[in-house]
Amino acid sequence: MTKFSFVLSLTLGRAPLAIAAAGLMVVHAFKPSVALLVAALGCMVCSALTDLFDGLLARKWKVTSRLGALADPLMDKVFYAVTLPVAVFVAAYLEDFNHALLLLALDVVSALRDQWVSFLRTVGSEYGADVKANWSGKLRTLIGFPVVVVAHLQLGLLALQKQSPAHESIKLLPENLVFALEIATIAITIISAGSYTLRYWQYLKRAANR
Image (cartoon, rainbow, N blue to C red; front, side):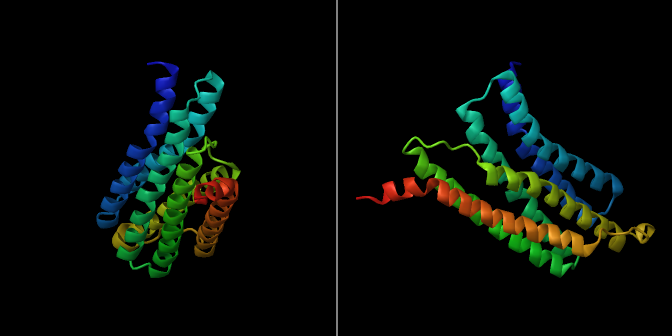
């Protein structure tokens, strides 16, 4: 395997790892198990870490490519598109409705932001714009991925606590902390959408010309 293929595999591997984590979390909600929770969180953490190492290795080995630049934000979108709806479902299933509503808001805002940024990149690419992630996209990923993992950890612990008598003594993370992190992620996601709008505004104006 070449260095380029290895880096690209890391990038593309983010999606199957996120899907595996989501599936394990759903099973864990119905049949709580420490092993299932550890496996789910492990897959999710590995998925998130690929976003860090693929870029670092690509730059170190000088194997950056346009395909990699386009695939990286796509895999980020897949991560959110898979993990957030599952988090909403698990929270609702566990009757943690306040958390479910907040996660739903995060899911909707993330989906809208990702669709909007994809549209902006499509418009920009018509005029040769740089479609790589900007600072706000990187910040959103840097904060958003760990927050999604924390949300799933909280839900996983809740499942163990509520549905398995042997784990009633399990302590949850402070609810206010988890909610604050998720609200901050919503805010950063909105800021990111605004940042990309400013970045591609000139291309939107050009595309609007008759």
